[in-house]
Image 1 (cartoon, rainbow, N blue to C red):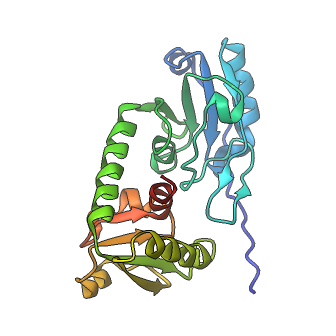
Image 2 (image 1 turned 180 degrees about the horizontal axis):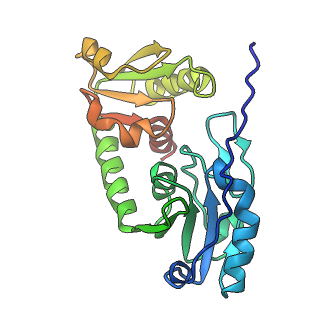
Length: 240
């Protein structure tokens, strides 16, 4: 297997949280950043604590790479993890994300109903992803679950892409579905890159189960000719 070396490109300018930004933040925060800003999180934490903020940082699960644990405070686009006192010990009021764009912090909305404050140090701008967006995600997920339950022809998408290949998990899912619903038909679809236009060749499929990056089942559903549900949502249905 070919080795892959990942070299993070670090943001070189010093990040200083201005008072006018800090004053808009809740008192208890869980702090995250993308890898470019990770090396400055310790200093940012001290800055905020000097402004009477209570800051928590935590190592999160990397769901794609066999459950590896990410660096403390690092947020990945696939980190659809539940962060609360029950799982992680610290009470907090909201998330604070240091980075540019909203792709990474949007992952927090999947399983967390808390506001996400996004501070972009490059342009000194603070945006807020409101916790109500979590409710919208959950409503759409429930709709896809209902579609799955009423569908006869199920297409399970499996990618060969390194880090996103879940072929064993997909096969196990197939067996569980057929055991619980013998009348359903399962079609395994193998690809290296998911081309949504190619899915139109399978117009007999009622719904697709995504076993690759979970963001496909949230961000890219509009690109698919048929509904897409993530594998973890189907697994949850099977546990009921």
